[in-house]
Image: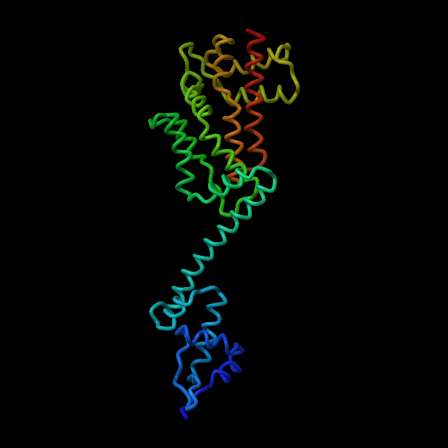
Length: 300
């Protein structure tokens, strides 16, 4: 009889079942040293360490083919571990997205929303950025523009482990960027409505002054038709090189002020995890600009 351990003895020394050891032997990751006169498998002394290594790698989820490569010295243990860790990272990201989608869908009763969320969250980073690029190309006709550059700098970046709120915001944002009505409205705004470009009347609006002064008026509940509102207008006009015609300026502000634009920045803030105060500032600015346009019309 040849020397060596029987499969039962190997099982006793490794704490593994005979059935598992037999499976590993059949798979080629636990080679036999020979057979007994009765035809039973025999294993060499190094089979204990080998079997334990195989068990550890399998418990970590390493496939049998990679286990064979490590044992045959075709790949180092470090290489296989690194590759497997990367694969696990990808699986974790997928599971995190799936969890966020399910939590977001739990707030809705629309089956189509689940399908849309699942599709949009599976996109690669490049594919997600392409959605914004397509919108900017449609609005600016592919031409260089500082407004487009600012939008690209503040592009939404869905995190690997998003919250349900971030997933819902991402879906709403994509729908907004693909909305032909919003695209057309954006095209109009970057034309005559673009405040920073200047107009024939020479008016250049101080955005910060308007947002600060009119925002404070909104929070204070000042009536746009009141004397207090006129005082706000005069303070804002003091920051302009040329105040110009108030009705014309009101028309320009109304052409530029589309709440969907401010909603865009709210959604970007949610997706990018901006502080609540920064996200709330977008809504506050929309209120301020609308209030100021009304006040201008009340005090031509």
